[in-house]
Amino acid sequence: MADFQQDDLTRFESKETAHNIPVGWALLFWGLIVFGAYYLWAFSPALGGWSQAQDAEAGGAGFGANLIATLAFTLVPTAVAVGLWLTFARKKKV
Image (spheres, rainbow, N blue to C red):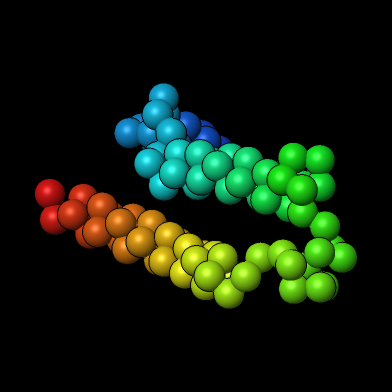
């Protein structure tokens, strides 16, 4: 006899997130929107005035801006990953 319980997909769905978006996905969603708005502003000739020729002539983003961008792209994802890890570690203990 076949086990028909395996065909019931509702048994595999998460009940606690059925109507709520997980925090990590919400952070990723809004973070990507904020990053997209910044990127559009910083590297769009129409909005931010950026041009490839200006960067090539060293008149564009300087060392300070590059350092801040490098730190932001390193520290922000690390902080989010640590935050998610702590959240899930705390959930398992309860």
